[in-house]
Length: 553
Image 1 (cartoon, rainbow, N blue to C red):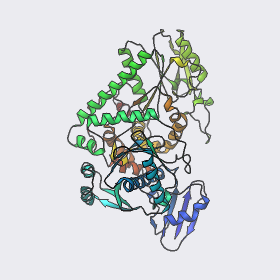
Image 2: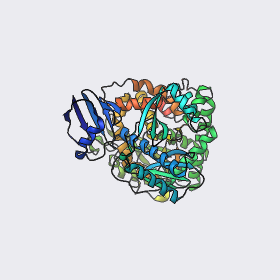
Image 3: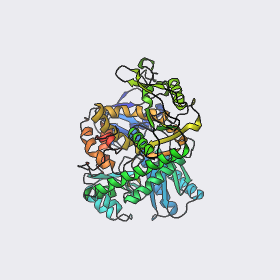
Image 4: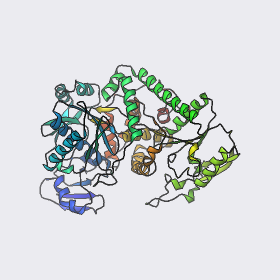
C-alpha cells in the first residue's frame, strides 16, 4: 500500500507500508522533520482525526496549528481537557460556559460562585497532569435518535436536547469522552492529551481565560495583553441576547421555527440604531472632527458609516463621508507582498501624504480637490469632488487602516475619534461550543462576493487566509486604540445567511482544495434553521450589505 504524504514546509514523500496503518503512526514517523506538532489530517481531501486507519492507497495531508481546521481541533480538544479539569477540581455538577474569544484565548465562566487565582492554578495543574498522562480522547459518531436519548440524560436543564430538536438538518454529532467525562462537540479532536502542550489558565474579571498559541507561532504562548474594549463589547452583546431571549442556537432556531423571527429582527435592529445614536452623541459632545472607522473584512463598515452620518445629522452636524480606498496609490506603485503580488491591504498602498494634506486642509476650511479612485484604470481621478467644509463639520472616514497611527500621524490627535467595528457573536452552539466570529464573517463575505462581485465560494475560501493574515497585521493590533466599539453582529444573521450560502458551498467538488473548508461550513450551518423569507429585514440593515436590498450601499 502506497501513501503519498504532504506536510507544510516539507517535501512530498511516498511511503510503502504493509497492511493498514494509523495516520498518527505516519505523523510520528515524520514528526522529527517537521517544525510543529501534527494535530490533524486530511485523507484524500477529507478532514479526519489522526487516529483514522489507512487501509488503501491514499493522499495524506498532515496539518499543524497553522491550518484553520487543525487550529479548531486544538481548541476543541483543549476545551474538553479544561472541562474535565474544572470538574475534577470543583466537582462534576459545576456548569462551565465557554463564552467568547478574548486575549488570544477563550473567556469562560465557571458557575461556582467566586473564582480565584488559586482556582486557576489548580485547574491548570490538573490539565498539565492529564496532558502528561497521555489520556485517550475517544469519540464516536452518534445518530439523531441516540443524540436525543443521550441528551435527555445530561445535567444541563435540557438545553442540549432542545438544541438537537430545533436543528432539523443536524443528522449526527460527535460524542467525546475523556477520563469518564462525556460531551458533544462539533469538530474533531486530537487522539490523546499528549498533543495539548501549550496553554495557560488565567483568572480574568468574573471568569477564566483559557489561552493557547496563535497560528503564527504554534509552539509558544504569546504574551498576555488585556483587551478591555472587546470584553466590554462582549458583555454588552450578552445583555442584548438575554434581552431577546437568545443565547444559544436552540433559542434562535426556536424563534425561526415558531414564526417569531420578525420580533427578533425588529428588536435587533432597534438595538443597533440605539447604539449608533449613542456613538453619534459621543462624537457631538467630543467636538472632534476626524471620525475614523476601521474593522476587519465583512464587518459592515460602509453601512455603519452611512448610518452614523444620518445620526450625526440628527444631532445637528453635517458630516462629510470619505473612504480611504479613494487614496490608493496608482496601481503600478502598489507595494508587493512576499509572493510578489500587489498588496492592496498594505498601509503603503495608500497615498498617506495626500490623505494627510487633504484632511488638514479641510480642517482649516480650505477648498480641496478630493480624489476618486478608478479601479478599472488603477488611477486617482481629480476634479469630481472639489469641496470645503465649515469649522463645525466632521469628516467620517471608513477604511481598514483607520486605527493605524501612521495613517493619521500628521493630523492632530485632538481631532480624532476612533471607532472599531466587528461582528462579534456571543451566540453559542451550546454551553461549551462557541461560534467563531471569523466563521460568521466568512459566510457574510461568501454571500456578498457571489452576489455583488461575481466570485464563487471557492474563490472566497481560497483568498480568506490572505485576508486573515492582513487583518492580523493591519487591524487587530490597533483595536485597543479605539475610543468606542460597535458590534455589527445581527443576532439572527446565521439563520438568514444559511439559505444563501448553502447552495454556493455545495457546488465545491471533492477534488477542489477548498472542499474540506466548504464541508466544515456546511456542517456548521446544519446547526441552524434557515429563514426562507427575509423581507422583514429593513433596507438600511447591515445584513442588507451582504444579502442585497440596501439603500445605503
